[in-house]
Amino acid sequence: MSRQSEGSSDAGGLTALVVASFGRHVLVEESDGRRILCHPRGKKNEAVVGDRVRWLPTADEGTIEKIQPRRNLLHRQDELRIKSFAANLDQVLILLAAEPEFSETQLARALIACKAQQLPVLIGLNKRDLRPAFERAWVRLEPYRQMGEEVLPLAIKPGGAAPDLADLRARLHSKATLVLGPSGAGKSSLVNTLLPQAGAATAEISRALASGRHTTTRTMLYWLEAQRSSALIDSPGFQEFGLHHIPAAALATLMPDLQAHARDCRFHNCSHRHEPGCGVIAALQMPKGAAGISPSRYRIYLDLFAEVSRPPRY
Image (cartoon, rainbow, N blue to C red; front, side, top):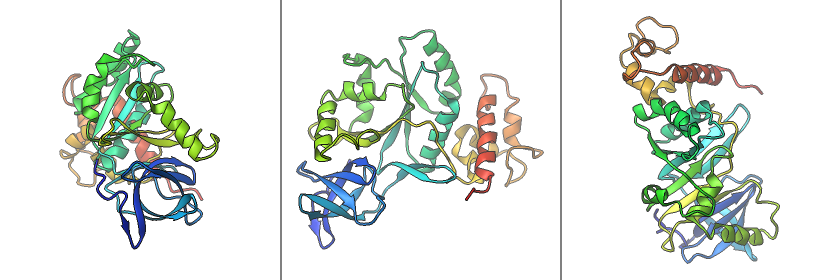
């Protein structure tokens, strides 16, 4: 994760990295580690964690003057609003749990959003000590492994040594990784296990805000080592993951199992719902274990196609 531009000065002000976001407040970090609370110059904060920004000092705080060009921006969008997670990412870790049972629809939505930004994904399945719940969850993820997604079995224990996290630690090295997942999947336990000092970092930010009232919903960046080359970005859990920024015609291209068979369709503009000669529909009839499409994945596609095709409500 490059930090070459951070802490420099130019005509547009100082440049720094956004390491935390709380509504209209952001915390920026300079190359020497100094952190400053900043506010947008206008009414709306457009900066997100991972952004490089230009800022100007104002007393003991600062104002955001400009957001530098982004490599990527992971976000979700429903009919009424856009919610951004983080920018300039190297990969996304989607953390699920054997219990409570995860939503395959939410997993599919997150994967589509990551694919749209060309972001590599790791899926972590937590609570492997809870058998047979873990075995059932592992079977549900079989279609995702077949289409090339990597699934890591995990057993994250709060305060535990978690020796099985060695593989995950190696995959986080020298990367900026956003952790996504529903409440109860173990995101807080993962952060606290990998970063015993995370609680102190949170308290430091609360002091910077002069109150803890802004910290109930937040996105925060944690450095995994003193050299600050590997970053773990923790985001709030979500219940909804809108994809209204994805055109309906592009959905199949962002679902690898469907895309693999869409090239066999008779019509180039096939919607994969009812057209004759559809390669996707034909793949549904393939024997179990073959490189086909699972019925659950196809149902998700149909539901998403109908959802993003509806005209917006104003």
